[in-house]
Length: 266
Image (cartoon, rainbow, N blue to C red; front, side, top):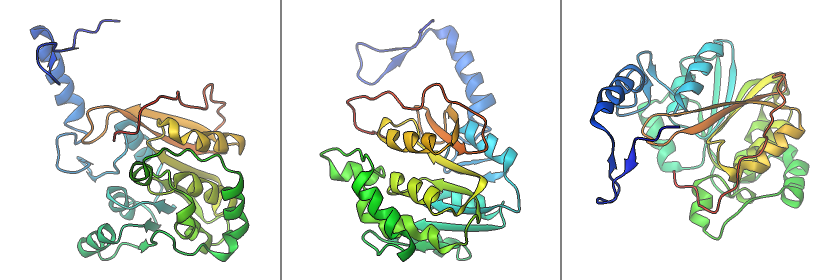
């Protein structure tokens, strides 16, 4: 494989490449990055605001989404604005009061629930929550701020993760996990039985090896996975947004991500 773009040994954080590649790189930016909103101030394309997922994931989502869908979303943001215009029902959960308030000031009709850290868990989730605390393999580091920011802190978010129990059984067509306590949210999504039998789970940043326990859990519960690796808004490096469903007839050859010694840096 050719690797003509290299780090400049004489200048830190600088890349160098042959002049003849300039037109290829600009053409790629013009034909792919620009139409997908990579240069814009927020995630969007020619149709409007998009979720902050990888571009291939957005393309797939826009192809399958239905106006009759009911969506539950852990974490609010640009995806909330997108889903609010494309589905019948949207419930979003947010832990950060400042972000929650700012989102509603500009979009007062959004159904975004503020559920802060250490909020009480829903009474129906007690057995599920306790079993998770006792038995689930949680990956942690010695850096609490890092773990908090990247959704690796679970035990303190029982109220946040169990908010899904407020809906009737088999209610949601889609559950998005893109906020806090991602492992606990995945378990609550499955064991609350609020996701329809053919429903879909989206896990963003699913390339992170720290989420391997989630991958293993969903796989053992019969969820096939479709990965959408690629670039996305405001990121120089690509990442992965994954879709999971028990209706996907897929046996993934590699369930787990390769472990590294580095912290999550995005």
